[in-house]
Image: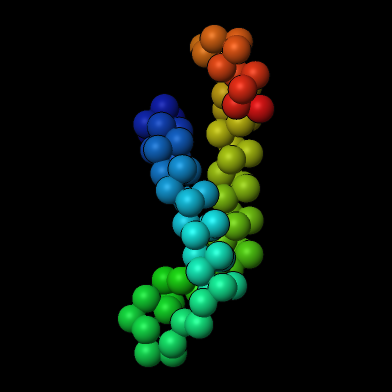
Length: 81
C-alpha cells in the first residue's frame, strides 16, 4: 500500500483543490435552492473543514516528497513553489 496510496493521494489532490475553490465560489456568489439535488455536495465541498482536509493531504504529500528527494528538474521545483 505504501507507494500506491501516495500516488492515489497525489492523483486526487488537483480535483480536491478545484472542488474547494469551485464550490466555495459557487456558494458565495449564487443562491443554492434548498431542493437543488447537488446542495449537499456543494455544502460539503464549500465547508472550511473540507478545505482543512485538503491542506492535510497537501502536507502529507509534501513531507513524503521531501523524504524521497526531488526527482524533478530544479527549475520545475522552483516554479511549483
